[in-house]
Length: 208
Image (cartoon, rainbow, N blue to C red; front, side):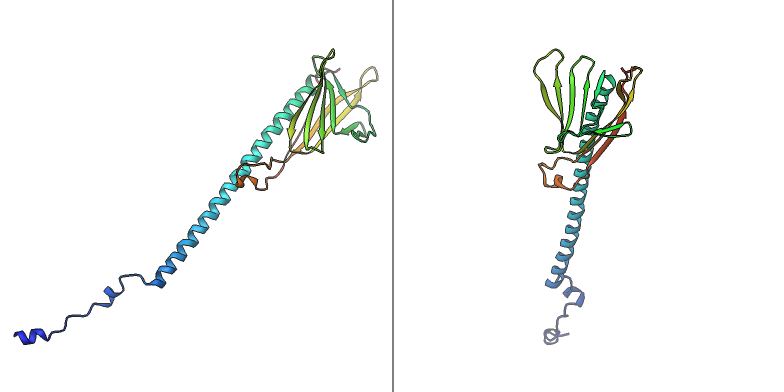
């Protein structure tokens, strides 16, 4: 082959495979759209997981606090020497209804083993359960909140007559419903958390 023939040889064209090695603009946009959809789905799943965790944590915390207060009330009933109310009342503020031998009210009064008068009140206007303590022998009355977020609280007192014909408490029941606190620091903690309800009962041990 002489020099003249060599100059007339056309260089080979690039193959179709080499030309298709890069990404076109359309392909790039489609890839970005797919990645965005995957990331959005992942974020939605993570957000739902955080909300479920926050709701479960709030519910568990509320149940624990409610059970602790209920346990304290039942302990007071078991160790006290006198209880009330044991008679029906039409008081507009603190009504007491009687069905059979069971009284229903929003408050419970008792005398503890030290002679102090204790009164547990449910105040619907504040959604709170309060304890009022009048010390034995006089002294300043102590008032303190026991539980907040209380949407319902009912005390049931099953009464009986003792050997002297005096009405005494046979069994006391507590029915408390508490809504978890909505004053949350994180936005995910403001999810709708179901209310916690605790029902418990006990009998006095110091009554014949």
